[in-house]
Image 1 (cartoon, one colour):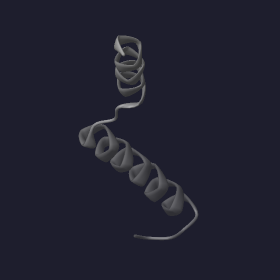
Image 2 (cartoon, rainbow, N blue to C red):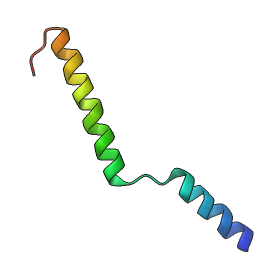
Image 3 (cartoon, rainbow, N blue to C red):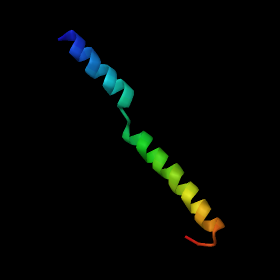
Image 4 (cartoon, rainbow, N blue to C red):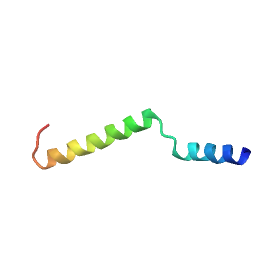
Length: 44
């Protein structure tokens, strides 16, 4: 049973992503997309 718990904990550590991380990445990607669209002549 302890092996199972340790496995689940390791998976959680490996794949856990916070909301803050998701939002920060979204903002960086949105800024990059906006810059690209401006280069193509689209004004946002």
